[in-house]
Image 1 (spheres, helix red, strand yellow):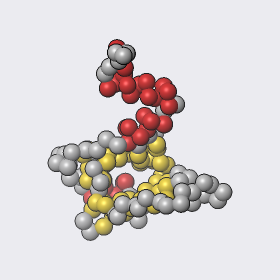
Image 2: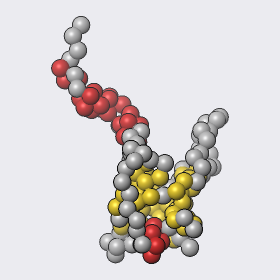
Image 3: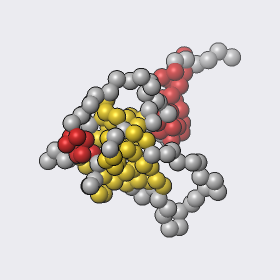
Image 4: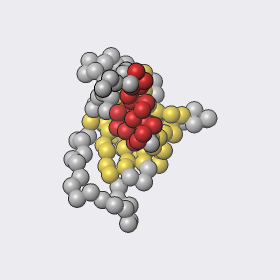
Length: 141
């Protein structure tokens, strides 16, 4: 049996999986992309880095960007919801990771790109992870 010409390219296959799977497979495929270990970074002034410090969370997870002597550090935690389904075994969370910047409003930690989104007044209000936006719930100290 010959493969369908519509599904012959990787892009077409991904699109077909998204259509067949309702988008869940696309989320897994997109979040798995990692940056090269040697991606060029930029140094931002400390007062600009301080704009990103804080806690960003939704119902299932929280990202905390804390200022340290070495710069910004990311800690990820999962938050339990009453009555929610929980797996028997949770995967281990990554240890606190240093945060570098590829540009203003674009951070990277654990080789994962973390774009920040600003509100209409120019304040940092969200961080994007995968296909989710986590709103800022606490400002950094």
